[in-house]
Image (cartoon, rainbow, N blue to C red; front, side, top):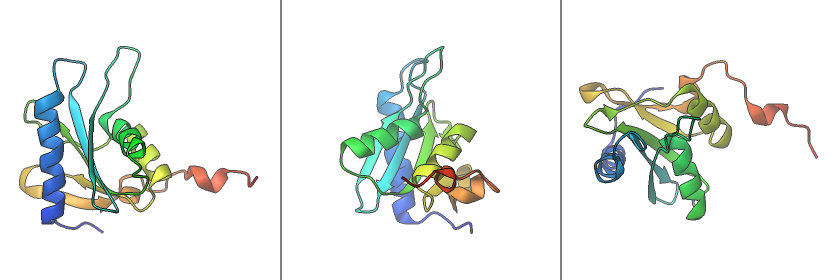
Length: 136
């Protein structure tokens, strides 16, 4: 189910864009993410690039949200530096987002074709980590 971005979604995109403009410097930080918690709080973060790999902005925002006591995220978006606009999550992020927040909505698309989609739509027929855990 794809939907058009609502004003709250545009606010989230603007928050991520502000974080990208303010915090993305050089090659170490090139992406920003913003997530809205169910209680309405917006949390932002940037990626941490390193030649050995590093967490994407979407993963950093999960940790930042948890550090602020926001454990139930509703919607997320990532924005690239240098006015690249909305960037869809990579495969690793899609899997982590699905595992942590199966009801999460993700803002994807570019320019006038932005849309809000359930995380499951970005990872069809996916492995669901929780389905394969042995009950304690």
